[in-house]
Length: 98
Image (cartoon, rainbow, N blue to C red; front, top):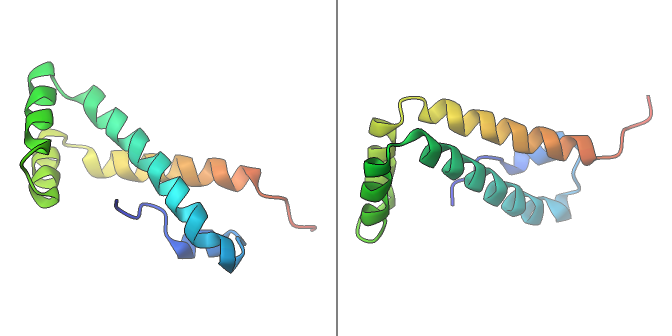
């Protein structure tokens, strides 16, 4: 799984060091799901079937290249969904006293 949300992102939000890895894994899984859903929605039925077929034999690099070629705004999808997941998480954190 790719790290869309990093340890540094979480530390910058004030997450305790001992909690960072578990939270990062959970948030990255959520981001990956959202990204995958949006990628699938942007593909034709034929492209979805091609992607499904490729997942059985292709490497992660080959899949990434194929997706980048067939989803022109792929990097934007990644960034938007990572930002959404991180933003939603940040909203759940206790507010520091001003």
